[in-house]
Length: 238
Image (cartoon, rainbow, N blue to C red):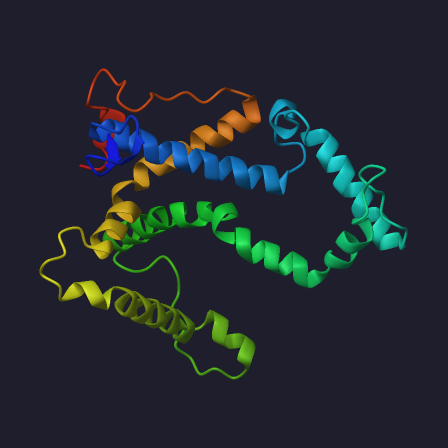
């Protein structure tokens, strides 16, 4: 595949050619999100040591722990080298506001797993209502006597879904009435959310198993798949 004009190509490389390769690409993205989340969380007694401490990771964690210990005890920060003249400045920058900004900046990358699990939750609710004839949770419509009771009443659920529906409408209202839009962003988001839900679930499981058992993840490169059909990926979608 090539991106750009005929006279000035901007990029050239392999591109997915089959549905199976598209699914494999989405699964690979999810595996990276899960690995990022596990590295940041670093749960004890869960991850394999080769995943927990890749090259230089062990040294980095010890360096961060020593830096935070110095900040808590009021000790001067340790310079990186003899020519380091910004240690004090970096210490002043390590505040709760700096931590909050960093978490907000990396929130989509670190917590994308929640987005991947959202379709599974929706499917589970739909199947439960289909077979049970009622939602698998109670909808309390009683009067709200205190502010804390609003979180376990029907009203908070209604307010959440109303706000979300309004936000989606405002975000995509510009393309709903455009008959010339061949690849609508609304359709692409629906495809991303529902069409790759099963493949993403497979990617989550494989990434967790890889982190726990130190198994190397394997996938086919784009344009190198021998078969264009993968029944494990495609049958559940059908």
